[in-house]
Image (cartoon, rainbow, N blue to C red; front, side, top):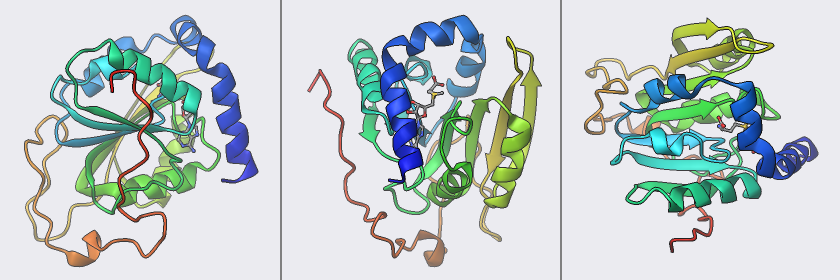
Length: 227
Ligand SMILES: C[S@@+](CC[C@H](N)C(=O)[O-])C[C@H]1O[C@@H](n2cnc3c(N)ncnc32)[C@H](O)[C@@H]1O
Protein backbone atom coordinates (compact mmCIF):
# COMPACT_ATOMS: atom_id res chain seq x y z
CA UNK A 1 0.00 0.00 0.00
CA UNK A 2 1.43 3.42 -0.92
CA UNK A 3 1.79 6.07 1.75
CA UNK A 4 -0.90 8.17 0.01
CA UNK A 5 -3.32 5.23 0.26
CA UNK A 6 -2.40 4.72 3.92
CA UNK A 7 -3.24 8.39 4.49
CA UNK A 8 -6.66 7.89 2.87
CA UNK A 9 -7.27 4.81 5.03
CA UNK A 10 -6.34 6.66 8.22
CA UNK A 11 -8.54 9.61 7.22
CA UNK A 12 -11.59 7.34 6.90
CA UNK A 13 -10.72 5.37 10.04
CA UNK A 14 -10.83 8.69 11.90
CA UNK A 15 -13.98 9.86 10.07
CA UNK A 16 -15.99 6.65 10.68
CA UNK A 17 -17.73 7.64 13.97
CA UNK A 18 -19.00 10.95 12.46
CA UNK A 19 -19.57 9.87 8.87
CA UNK A 20 -23.30 9.13 8.92
CA UNK A 21 -24.19 12.40 10.65
CA UNK A 22 -21.99 14.33 8.20
CA UNK A 23 -23.53 12.55 5.22
CA UNK A 24 -27.08 13.27 6.40
CA UNK A 25 -26.23 16.95 6.86
CA UNK A 26 -24.39 17.45 3.59
CA UNK A 27 -26.06 15.26 1.00
CA UNK A 28 -29.59 14.57 -0.08
CA UNK A 29 -28.98 11.46 -2.11
CA UNK A 30 -31.01 8.82 -0.30
CA UNK A 31 -33.62 8.68 -3.09
CA UNK A 32 -30.96 8.50 -5.80
CA UNK A 33 -29.20 5.66 -4.00
CA UNK A 34 -32.48 3.77 -3.64
CA UNK A 35 -33.46 4.25 -7.29
CA UNK A 36 -30.06 3.13 -8.54
CA UNK A 37 -29.68 0.08 -6.33
CA UNK A 38 -33.01 -1.58 -5.75
CA UNK A 39 -33.34 -3.31 -9.14
CA UNK A 40 -29.75 -4.52 -9.52
CA UNK A 41 -29.43 -8.25 -10.17
CA UNK A 42 -26.62 -10.74 -10.59
CA UNK A 43 -23.26 -10.68 -8.82
CA UNK A 44 -22.69 -7.22 -7.39
CA UNK A 45 -19.51 -5.65 -5.99
CA UNK A 46 -19.77 -2.40 -4.04
CA UNK A 47 -16.37 -0.71 -3.76
CA UNK A 48 -15.81 1.74 -0.87
CA UNK A 49 -18.94 0.67 1.01
CA UNK A 50 -18.05 2.97 3.91
CA UNK A 51 -20.51 2.75 6.81
CA UNK A 52 -22.92 0.74 4.67
CA UNK A 53 -25.51 3.42 3.86
CA UNK A 54 -26.34 1.48 0.69
CA UNK A 55 -26.77 -1.91 2.33
CA UNK A 56 -30.50 -1.66 3.18
CA UNK A 57 -31.22 -0.43 -0.35
CA UNK A 58 -30.28 -3.64 -2.14
CA UNK A 59 -33.00 -6.16 -2.80
CA UNK A 60 -33.27 -8.85 -0.12
CA UNK A 61 -31.82 -11.54 -2.38
CA UNK A 62 -29.14 -9.41 -4.02
CA UNK A 63 -25.80 -11.24 -4.16
CA UNK A 64 -23.46 -8.50 -2.90
CA UNK A 65 -19.79 -8.36 -1.93
CA UNK A 66 -18.83 -5.00 -0.45
CA UNK A 67 -15.27 -3.84 0.23
CA UNK A 68 -13.49 -0.92 1.84
CA UNK A 69 -9.94 -0.11 2.81
CA UNK A 70 -10.89 1.34 6.21
CA UNK A 71 -11.44 -1.20 8.97
CA UNK A 72 -13.45 1.29 11.02
CA UNK A 73 -15.80 2.16 8.15
CA UNK A 74 -16.29 -1.58 7.55
CA UNK A 75 -16.98 -2.08 11.26
CA UNK A 76 -19.90 0.37 10.92
CA UNK A 77 -21.12 -1.57 7.88
CA UNK A 78 -20.95 -4.83 9.86
CA UNK A 79 -23.07 -3.28 12.64
CA UNK A 80 -25.64 -2.09 10.10
CA UNK A 81 -25.71 -5.52 8.48
CA UNK A 82 -26.28 -7.26 11.81
CA UNK A 83 -29.51 -5.27 12.21
CA UNK A 84 -30.81 -6.12 8.75
CA UNK A 85 -31.87 -9.72 9.28
CA UNK A 86 -31.72 -12.02 6.24
CA UNK A 87 -29.23 -10.85 3.65
CA UNK A 88 -26.67 -12.10 1.14
CA UNK A 89 -23.98 -9.47 1.71
CA UNK A 90 -20.31 -10.26 2.39
CA UNK A 91 -17.96 -7.57 3.72
CA UNK A 92 -14.29 -7.61 2.79
CA UNK A 93 -11.34 -5.39 3.68
CA UNK A 94 -9.66 -4.67 0.36
CA UNK A 95 -7.89 -1.96 -1.62
CA UNK A 96 -9.91 -0.93 -4.69
CA UNK A 97 -6.63 -0.32 -6.50
CA UNK A 98 -5.78 -4.02 -6.22
CA UNK A 99 -9.01 -6.02 -6.14
CA UNK A 100 -8.57 -9.67 -5.13
CA UNK A 101 -11.09 -11.01 -7.61
CA UNK A 102 -10.66 -12.84 -10.89
CA UNK A 103 -11.26 -11.10 -14.20
CA UNK A 104 -14.90 -10.97 -15.27
CA UNK A 105 -16.45 -11.85 -11.89
CA UNK A 106 -19.25 -9.28 -11.48
CA UNK A 107 -22.37 -8.23 -13.37
CA UNK A 108 -22.42 -4.84 -11.62
CA UNK A 109 -19.89 -2.75 -9.70
CA UNK A 110 -21.21 0.09 -7.51
CA UNK A 111 -19.02 2.99 -6.36
CA UNK A 112 -20.73 5.76 -4.37
CA UNK A 113 -18.52 8.80 -3.61
CA UNK A 114 -15.60 6.53 -4.42
CA UNK A 115 -13.67 8.26 -7.20
CA UNK A 116 -13.53 11.51 -5.23
CA UNK A 117 -12.01 9.62 -2.25
CA UNK A 118 -9.39 7.19 -3.59
CA UNK A 119 -5.73 7.98 -4.08
CA UNK A 120 -5.52 6.78 -7.71
CA UNK A 121 -8.89 6.90 -9.54
CA UNK A 122 -7.30 5.58 -12.77
CA UNK A 123 -6.11 2.39 -11.06
CA UNK A 124 -9.52 1.90 -9.46
CA UNK A 125 -11.27 2.35 -12.82
CA UNK A 126 -8.95 -0.21 -14.49
CA UNK A 127 -9.52 -2.70 -11.68
CA UNK A 128 -13.29 -2.23 -11.89
CA UNK A 129 -13.21 -2.81 -15.65
CA UNK A 130 -11.14 -5.96 -15.14
CA UNK A 131 -13.51 -7.55 -12.60
CA UNK A 132 -16.66 -6.67 -14.56
CA UNK A 133 -18.03 -9.33 -16.87
CA UNK A 134 -18.17 -8.31 -20.53
CA UNK A 135 -21.37 -6.27 -20.78
CA UNK A 136 -21.33 -5.63 -17.02
CA UNK A 137 -21.95 -2.14 -15.67
CA UNK A 138 -20.43 0.34 -13.25
CA UNK A 139 -22.92 2.51 -11.34
CA UNK A 140 -21.53 5.57 -9.55
CA UNK A 141 -22.62 8.66 -7.66
CA UNK A 142 -20.22 11.35 -6.56
CA UNK A 143 -18.67 14.78 -6.86
CA UNK A 144 -16.73 16.03 -9.89
CA UNK A 145 -18.24 13.64 -12.43
CA UNK A 146 -16.77 15.82 -15.20
CA UNK A 147 -13.36 14.60 -13.97
CA UNK A 148 -14.45 10.99 -13.50
CA UNK A 149 -15.87 10.51 -17.02
CA UNK A 150 -12.46 10.78 -18.81
CA UNK A 151 -10.86 8.52 -16.17
CA UNK A 152 -13.45 5.82 -16.89
CA UNK A 153 -13.04 6.26 -20.65
CA UNK A 154 -9.26 5.93 -20.39
CA UNK A 155 -9.76 2.70 -18.44
CA UNK A 156 -11.73 1.38 -21.44
CA UNK A 157 -15.25 1.72 -20.05
CA UNK A 158 -18.03 3.06 -22.26
CA UNK A 159 -20.15 5.84 -20.75
CA UNK A 160 -23.82 4.89 -21.00
CA UNK A 161 -25.36 7.87 -19.19
CA UNK A 162 -24.50 10.82 -16.97
CA UNK A 163 -26.75 13.05 -14.86
CA UNK A 164 -25.95 15.88 -12.46
CA UNK A 165 -28.00 17.81 -9.91
CA UNK A 166 -27.29 20.61 -7.42
CA UNK A 167 -26.57 19.63 -3.82
CA UNK A 168 -25.21 21.97 -1.14
CA UNK A 169 -22.00 23.64 -2.25
CA UNK A 170 -21.24 21.35 -5.24
CA UNK A 171 -23.21 19.29 -7.69
CA UNK A 172 -23.52 15.53 -7.41
CA UNK A 173 -23.27 13.40 -10.53
CA UNK A 174 -24.42 9.94 -11.51
CA UNK A 175 -22.51 7.95 -14.12
CA UNK A 176 -23.36 4.57 -15.60
CA UNK A 177 -20.59 2.95 -17.65
CA UNK A 178 -20.17 -0.41 -19.31
CA UNK A 179 -17.46 -2.92 -20.09
CA UNK A 180 -17.91 -3.76 -23.76
CA UNK A 181 -19.65 -7.06 -24.42
CA UNK A 182 -17.67 -9.68 -26.35
CA UNK A 183 -18.33 -9.31 -30.06
CA UNK A 184 -20.63 -11.88 -31.69
CA UNK A 185 -22.25 -12.89 -28.44
CA UNK A 186 -25.69 -11.73 -27.31
CA UNK A 187 -25.39 -8.49 -25.33
CA UNK A 188 -25.09 -9.21 -21.62
CA UNK A 189 -28.16 -8.27 -19.66
CA UNK A 190 -28.28 -4.82 -18.10
CA UNK A 191 -28.60 -4.15 -14.34
CA UNK A 192 -32.25 -4.49 -13.48
CA UNK A 193 -32.69 -7.30 -15.95
CA UNK A 194 -29.84 -9.61 -15.09
CA UNK A 195 -31.25 -12.98 -14.00
CA UNK A 196 -28.26 -15.19 -14.68
CA UNK A 197 -24.62 -14.78 -15.62
CA UNK A 198 -24.10 -14.10 -19.32
CA UNK A 199 -22.30 -16.84 -21.25
CA UNK A 200 -18.64 -15.99 -21.70
CA UNK A 201 -16.68 -18.16 -24.07
CA UNK A 202 -13.59 -16.03 -24.60
CA UNK A 203 -11.00 -17.89 -22.55
CA UNK A 204 -8.58 -15.01 -22.74
CA UNK A 205 -11.09 -12.73 -20.99
CA UNK A 206 -11.59 -15.17 -18.18
CA UNK A 207 -7.94 -16.14 -17.77
CA UNK A 208 -6.65 -15.63 -14.27
CA UNK A 209 -4.39 -12.61 -14.01
CA UNK A 210 -0.75 -13.61 -13.75
CA UNK A 211 -0.53 -11.35 -10.81
CA UNK A 212 -0.19 -12.36 -7.23
CA UNK A 213 -3.10 -10.15 -6.23
CA UNK A 214 -5.63 -12.08 -8.33
CA UNK A 215 -5.27 -15.46 -6.78
CA UNK A 216 -8.99 -16.04 -6.59
CA UNK A 217 -8.46 -17.05 -2.99
CA UNK A 218 -11.33 -16.36 -0.66
CA UNK A 219 -11.06 -12.75 0.49
CA UNK A 220 -10.37 -11.98 4.13
CA UNK A 221 -13.71 -11.60 5.87
CA UNK A 222 -14.33 -8.83 8.31
CA UNK A 223 -15.44 -10.11 11.72
CA UNK A 224 -19.20 -9.95 11.79
CA UNK A 225 -21.18 -9.66 15.02
CA UNK A 226 -23.66 -12.28 13.75
CA UNK A 227 -21.07 -14.97 13.14
C1 LIG B 1 -16.76 9.22 0.77
S1 LIG B 1 -16.72 7.61 1.42
C2 LIG B 1 -18.13 6.88 0.64
C3 LIG B 1 -18.70 5.74 1.43
C4 LIG B 1 -19.99 5.15 0.84
N1 LIG B 1 -19.78 4.62 -0.48
C5 LIG B 1 -21.09 6.17 0.84
O1 LIG B 1 -21.59 6.51 -0.25
O2 LIG B 1 -21.48 6.64 1.90
C6 LIG B 1 -15.39 6.86 0.53
C7 LIG B 1 -15.09 5.45 0.99
O3 LIG B 1 -14.09 4.91 0.12
C8 LIG B 1 -13.16 4.20 0.91
N2 LIG B 1 -11.89 4.11 0.18
C9 LIG B 1 -10.99 5.10 -0.08
N3 LIG B 1 -9.93 4.61 -0.75
C10 LIG B 1 -10.17 3.29 -0.93
C11 LIG B 1 -9.45 2.23 -1.56
N4 LIG B 1 -8.26 2.44 -2.15
N5 LIG B 1 -9.98 1.01 -1.55
C12 LIG B 1 -11.19 0.76 -0.94
N6 LIG B 1 -11.92 1.71 -0.35
C13 LIG B 1 -11.42 2.97 -0.34
C14 LIG B 1 -13.05 5.00 2.20
O4 LIG B 1 -12.51 4.24 3.26
C15 LIG B 1 -14.51 5.40 2.41
O5 LIG B 1 -15.21 4.44 3.17
